[in-house]
Length: 366
Image 1 (cartoon, one colour):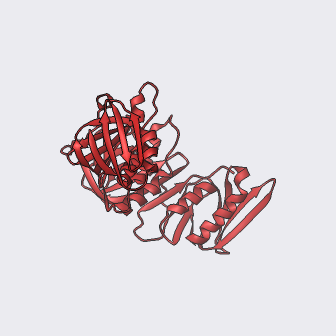
Image 2 (tube, one colour):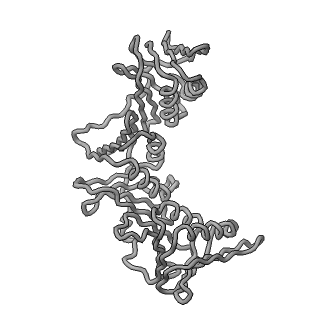
Image 3 (cartoon, one colour):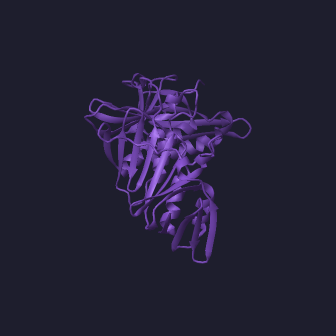
């Protein structure tokens, strides 16, 4: 194999796929990146057997071929080079790299030992093309409520599913729940995509990307953004019937300005660190206020209040971090905060008539 690429494109591709390269015991080849010519392009790929990511970059091919090289070393070497062209040449399973006054030889491993990259048949799959901004927002709004508990794998991903003619994303960790309506659909979809996969897709979205192409089959999902491609296994199992957890109505509600609510939540959180993050939220219809109270036994206590449009009176204890994270992903200057009592779920949502996002937080037992 012999070719020339630009340092900027090569470094960007190596950085993107290198994150997926794995140091799994017994399979040292997985810590390598695959380099393979494909027509007048260079394929740069890595896999950890759960996720495979590929990037294509333009190249001047003098001699086709393939090789695998240690991900970390080649990524750091190429990113340290000055801008310009990089010459690659494979000699006896070693890759010779030359750029200006810099030259290195990196020991490689034959590409035949590299696992076969997964594929998805487009004929028998369900496909979507999602606007980049909608995709980024929907994923960001839901991955924050996924679980890190590997003993309940179905909660470690985002549930993509069709319901009454729409595609929804939902996630829960048992303490909170988020649901986002994304696009209309005629297809029947039910798939749990690992959080780590979605985070990788977000990192691969470049500034010049307009859309994300998504392809589902029975066991895998593929994301394509320009010349980048990520294929991941789906989480095996059935997602819980979360809709039964969403209250049909609430006895107590407050309409608040988001910037003010964010500020009082942040301040209350400072005093809540010692008490497991718990803050007491009080809704007062006579005063038309929402107040947050938190105590740090060693340091002091705090009460912050903001004016609101209030219906009903009540009090609930919440985790301040959960509340702050929910507020950070609701895209509206005014939002609704509602619940029915000390032990009932709290619903946060935009006040827009056709809101497409709900965030539910379970109360703490005070």
